[in-house]
Image 1: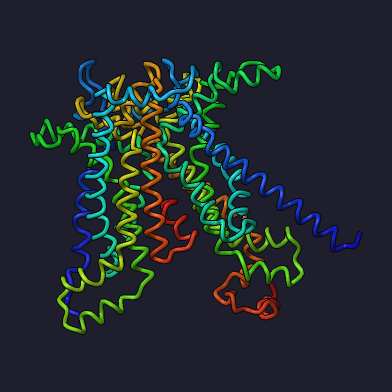
Image 2 (image 1 turned 90 degrees about the vertical axis):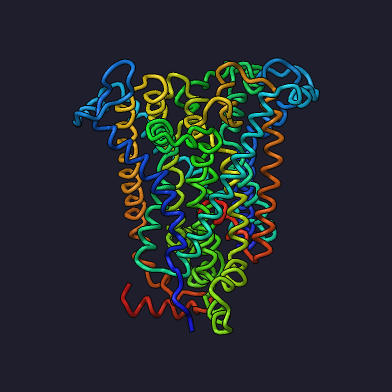
Length: 312
Length: 287
């Protein structure tokens, strides 16, 4: 017999903490974004509310940075996917099981190394008078001129967020590995057919998780662009920061922050939608194979007959 | 050649391609870290230009109180922030797993919001908020550097610990708690003797991950920190403008070793609790 327990009260401290130190401050930023900067010495005022700051965000100079950020965000996410997918597949399927733990650890160490420090590592590597540049010059190339460009920022974000793509994909492939792929092969599917019609559709939650885990923090990134981008590789995160720290225009900075959140949520939804749509044809054909019946005990013949019954 | 040998040769070819790609990507992932480690043994004025090998930068650390203070501030805030996050997150995670209801969806929504909000937004939001609480409302505790850092660093960690603890307990039936109650244990005793030990691996790994996240936090720290309590990453960020010296690499190397130890402990704890490589990847990859 269970006595009436305190229940959700246990979560109360966490609720309170996040309400006071997350919801309230972010709410205040939203409030500031409708205000204005009254004078050189004041950061914001909210006695007159308007959408004027949002109009200012559409200013061509700011808008260009937004587009640049979106470009880096999309290109970075796509590159992470293309680079990370084979790695995750290799770790989960190709590598011997005994070595899987080690490989996971190897991917995790860079991920947990200080973000700023490993980005500085790239600054050292890409520096025009660094060892890579000298080595290239010895073979007869020009000195490296990539630092402080958008290319350097793209390299930096792909580097920084790649583990966030590899890990969920690895988890997803690890789950698919084994009986289901065997079954597909027994049913006469080739290697590529198995991959595209069984493995990848089943790994779809991992793909969506990876895309979101990379895209969302990447869009708000501030450090990579600061360390590697210089003037040419500006991102919205830096704009927001400079409005608060340098320009002391908290009203405009707040509007930018709000727009940034909206752009991220909107494009994350669109991105997840695209992944979902692209995988739709594969998924429709394989719906019954992935169903709860398709566990390790399912005989290949059984799933084939179910498939026939429904006429898929 | 028979068909079978052709097939075997082709299979080996694709396996080789996978191995090469995997190793290349690992090299890519480790390249800047190795560069930093090597740079910490650079005897020269600047980190970027290699002079010659030596331990000078490690010795120089002892002579530089600014660096030592920054690291000490980071370690302190990391420890306190991890304590706060673990306490709040563990209670919330247990509540979500054992007392589910409609509220869980709202709470998970809040945690999701916390995890998807870019750090820079948290940072610029916390700065005016701290100023408001500390100066306008006169709560002077919010003017304290360490308090500010702990609050800023704990937000994301609370979400991480809550997820971890919930995930571990949801996977295990509440039978044990019911048995304990049937045997006339009080709710408090059941909590201490049954629920908490069940959740312990998640609690421990949550603590260590929070600590590491806090050591790593640069963006929020750069905004909320006050002069006199500059944490290590903010010190590095400011050194970025004035020129990076090999001491920065030396401290980074030391911190890397510490992080590795923390991660190793997490892995050991989780493995003891029976997690597979995939479970550990899921835990450390953030869900």
